[in-house]
Length: 205
Image 1 (cartoon, one colour):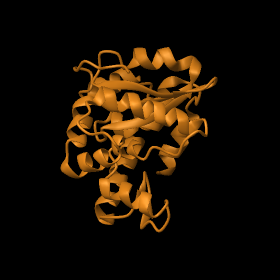
Image 2: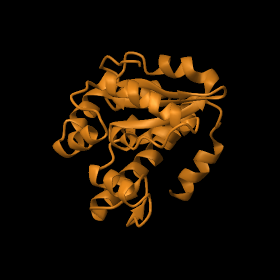
Image 3: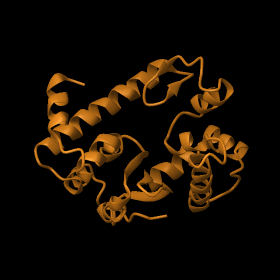
């Protein structure tokens, strides 16, 4: 991140929802990424759902505590296409999701993530696939218990390092781009419109 962007970021109000969405979900907002996690104060739950209503970005509540709400924000068409890739579909089937539609997958993942957050179960690694991580990297993470990675960026890399570095750089550029837009007073609604994410019907789970 450039010094200029860092300076702009430090001037943003971290309590504002637009700031939180911008900092956590920039690659999704620009259409570069099919999904992102977003964690906000529980009091902002309704505002998040309203923000993405009638947009290309759908919302799934993964977990809610007394203080925080964690969403999986995703572009439905992109996520469904990614999960249909042979290598991703095969790994999802290994996790027990055979022939399931997206709603059913997200419903079970939410239950499993809640169990993990409450220390009743291990981490559901299928979340990596729902975030668009390469299947080989998800497999590598599992087989190596999160160790012996080639590189760590937006996820731990176990294969095709040059391509992953290219993706990480693109995501970082997207974050700087969104920070500049928010710093100029632009709202998330306008950013979605600019990046053509306003014309689709969203879904809430």
